[in-house]
Image 1: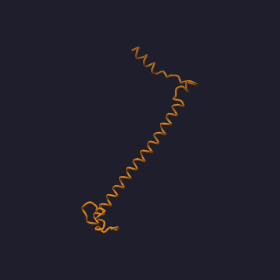
Image 2 (image 1 turned 30 degrees about the vertical axis):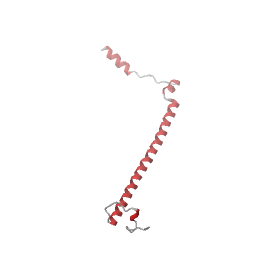
Image 3 (image 1 turned 135 degrees about the vertical axis):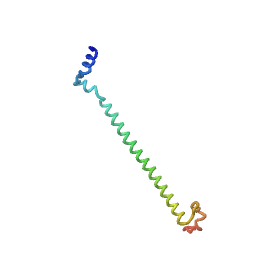
Image 4 (image 1 turned 45 degrees about the horizontal axis):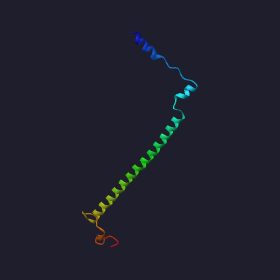
Length: 98
């Protein structure tokens, strides 16, 4: 029982608050601030680059889908179920430049 009392008594004592130079030596200091600031700056640039790349992929996918829709619409208007006409078929399809 005496051991439990000593453990409880030792854990309830508060450490003294450092003052002066000892208080300054506890924190990470200027080097920690610089390292954290650099890390934040690098993360900001990485996030901006990632957003730019995702936007580019999304726009490319939208453009390809729009192009596919236009090709399908052209097939429906011409009544073709096959692939789009080739350059040699341009006159027969009634396209300008034949």
